[in-house]
Image (spheres, rainbow, N blue to C red):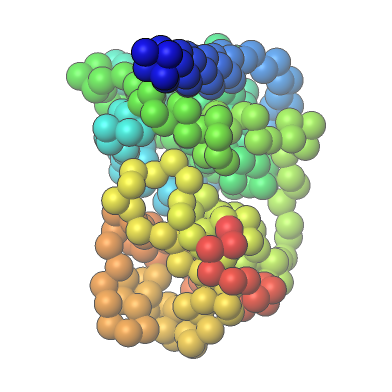
Length: 301
């Protein structure tokens, strides 16, 4: 009987400990979610009527994958729905019902894009603002002008974001960028535009959009925070798939979605149609930059 009694006590104690740990992890996630950031924004000049600037903004919104999450009309949509992750919704950026266009000032947009902070002072959810912090003032102004130019979209029918309970626990125990405001150095000002970048510098500038999946080291591996059925991201240093690629092969993959071995890349996991919108100069520079990186072992994000 003593054995049974002590076994019950041990099991009960372990279960209690597990409940305490889970409760602490959940509390930490909620604390991070509700943290308030007070960030002063320096206004930038934006020309909302110059067609060339609007076209540039469309280009930026495309190659920086804004349209991949928010939709081609920037009206918002579901970009992840998974039992573990939860329901993650991209915001309606337009001035239509359910959108933020009429509520957000230019400074509010800058704060969200560069700092990952919403109008209420809390972090945006899962938006890669830490990748957008490098966008220079010209591109940022063009992007915002383009957002303002979009027709109003009614998104009142869309559900609200709901973070899955398991995902909250995974976030605390890993490097998932669920609340990206925590990842950003908010003291860094908006970069000034560079008159002429070298091809490699241009490649480095656009490559920041790749790090969300391929990692800061571009070594690929398991992507933090995506649904379990997603494949690992490729190693895009010379330690991985790019070792066998010519620039022509790279262009074919980025523009047509066809890998060097003739496989068609799945748009859900590798949005090549978005990145293929880069100019020849951007793609060529990106290829040169990736080829210049230190060789990484696959999986070393």
